[in-house]
Image (cartoon, rainbow, N blue to C red; front, side, top):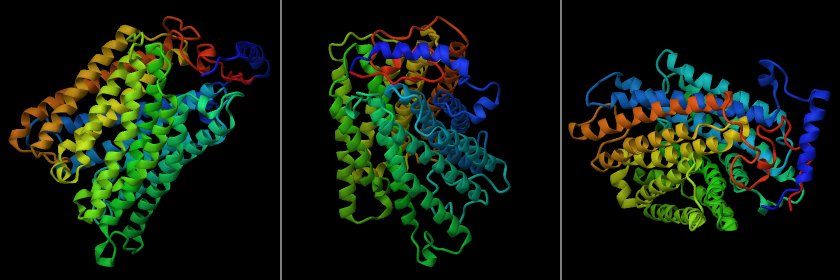
Length: 538
């Protein structure tokens, strides 16, 4: 990116320091500051803390699931509660942990990266956050309702969720509507900010890749969230108003639910990974001390992944009995999506080639992301082949595949981003020794957890089962031990973050050695209003 006109940014700081307190534009005091705040940094912080709490909650459910699967037979929970756990774990991790965390990153960083004073629609921003705790309180409260919590898997297929769903399903439907509203409002805000508030001289093709990845993700969100709303609305009317969208007895089709759900669900998978691509593309150049290789091809690759994500949805449905021509179309389209993804991996590798690489904690998590996410991509290619998919369908191989994409993918990129920007946010450096300890514990345990699942899946262990045949016992025990270590190591992460917020070695304005971008021209921590005078990008 171009050089910043430093005189402008310095006048910004002077203006901020002198002017702010005279006119009292700073944060309000006490708890109400957080309730009514319209400041992008405050809202970003709330998103990040909320998503981390959800991550720990969803993680506790995962621990319970793995504890139950530690040995064959019933250990801790009955099969009915096991189904509720798998459902809630999936919903909380997807909608409560990964998505809000990326929105938190977007809120914090996008205005600072494009030289804007704040997000374009600050009040909408406040509202889009505060809807989330309400939505998740409703959803989690279903665990304590009569009957049971939702027990039909995170994909809530009809007729399990419509004809046979427990009474609490209606609360779940309402919660999903609220989450969708929050996502759409957040997406509108990101688009409005990036298109309208860039600093003078910052063209779209000079923007940091993180902003590009979020701009494209925001369009995906606006396109697919209403589809999810349509699916749950049809569920509601099937349950209470006598319609038969998904009821074969009334002329409907249960498989239609899968089409509607995955038309939302497949782009949703990319909503959870495109911002991760952006984060990795920001971190790599800093620690390789080289500019990102193939900036323009990165942008086009992200855009083509987003486009292709709309035409591959039925690869989740190869065994539903669709016509051969459709199976072939979705098979080839799914293989095609590997091409732009391969372009990105190639560009990241080329960025590292002959670079002067150093291995700070953000870089370690980034390298693990590239390696393990690619591995998850390969098992995705295996799943895209129709005859092979007949074997893998609904086994632990699928569980292994999507956890390799989402844990070392989405979660590792979020952890890398936290280590990378935390000194900028707090003004303090984290402990590199503790950070590396956290990395190695996470890296080893994540592979110990999910790699054995490929084997038990190929050997035929079905997913979403509370009990299993004896021959799967050893690998399940390994996976459970790995899961407990991974869960415990995230508590170390929590400790590192809190310790860094409370104090530590002072971070410089640049934090790292020669990082690119406007955010590094601000002091650490940045002032309450970032750029009151827009910087000039040359």
